[in-house]
Amino acid sequence: MVQQLTPRRALSRRRLLGSGAAVAAATLAGPLAAAPRRKPNIVVILCDDLGYGDLGVFGSRLIRTPNIDRLAREGARLTDFYAAANVCTPSRAGLLTGRYPIRMGLAHEVIQAGDTSRGLPQSEVTIAEALRPEYATALVGKWHLGHVAPWWPPTSQGFDVFFGLPYSHDMKPIGLFTSGPGVELTREDVDMARLTERFFDRGLAFVEDQQAKPFLLMLALTAPHLPLVPHPDHKGHSPAAAYGDVVEEVDAGVGRLLAKLKALGLDRDTLVILTSDNGPWFDGSAGPLRDRKGGAGWDGGYRVPFVARYPAVIPAGLTSDAIAMNIDLLPTFLALAGQAPPAVELDGRDLTRVLTTRRAPSPHDELILFNNEQVAAIRTQRWKLVGRSYYRHLDLPLDRLGWTGLFDVQADPSESYNLAAAHPDVLADMKARMQRAQAKFEPMGVAKAAAAPAAR
Image (cartoon, rainbow, N blue to C red; front, side, top):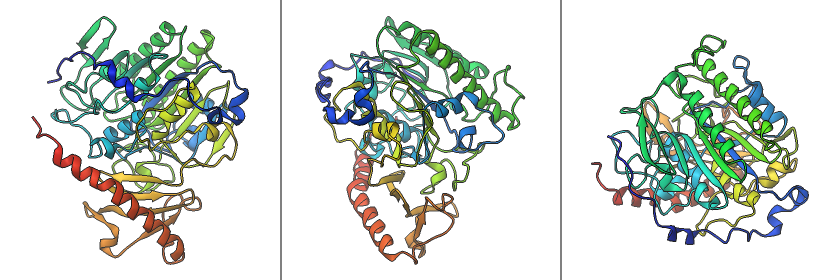
């Protein structure tokens, strides 16, 4: 059963955080230099299993998403944005910490309801912890980073307010929990058809309550993860069936959020981001990408939609193919807020120039894609080396099968045509990158697995 929480960890942990206002002026050079220096409000709408091809602005012809499309039209769209993993728990760990999830022992699959042995380590610094105390912080929606103490609830990990679920809504037992000032932890039953509505309701209430100071709102929705239970007001409306109904309800919630920000006078100074924790599961569309959620190596499991709107800073209509990942959100938010990064080794990079300057290069030379504790692929701006995938339900390194996959993903986003033989110099470089990544990171996975306590 889900347990109630022990008190919040000691504030001495804040020694890991830098002195808030010490970010160098060079970080905010270029378009940001002339921008208003009010600290931005930040809203991250993290969808669950939303596919690359499920939004109008990313090519969907069946699912209508006018409000999300508006975010892109009035802000930025990143076409080559990756989740930190091909499944939920590690992806969320990477997003919140700015670090590859293998560093924290969370690379292996998702945390199941019966698994009480794992969670986001308290030694990790979350986005919420990094922004406090200057920011009010809330997590509304799904946590899935440990559902017993000391990892639960999220108020033990830097969030002032939590309203949501401990893990995916297809897991049992399930309940809707509240934790925050004056509330240790309370539980209520879940009305699946109204869950997305409840999440937006609580998120908008938080925005209204905290309008006088900067705030961070993580809206970690359960939609469109299975099971699909559309709201009565949206049921049967989408040409994409129940999946489309659920995504279109999310879009309606985005419209409500934008209207609330406008009514409160917060519209110009609020960064709103919408993305997904991984590719689509059984339903949904990966667009032109190969494979889907859980698939090893191929982009369909990792590459996700990303749109960002911040009228004071991000120019309207910016589209970038610079490679980026959700581990970049923490350093980006801190740069925008004028705060120093935590004193830990980050894998993420600041995306402010990518989001504010057309044709700005990626801050990454490469991105590493993991499947559990193994390096599955390496992505550079043009090339992708796939080294691990599934064959007859077995997870095998492809070179053990006598095959190496090198793809020009800019010309061939579906990763259909293997160019390994045509570009031996590129192949050698990409193999060297993979070997370095394996040598650096895979032993971390082995060490964490050996040190992990047995499941209770």
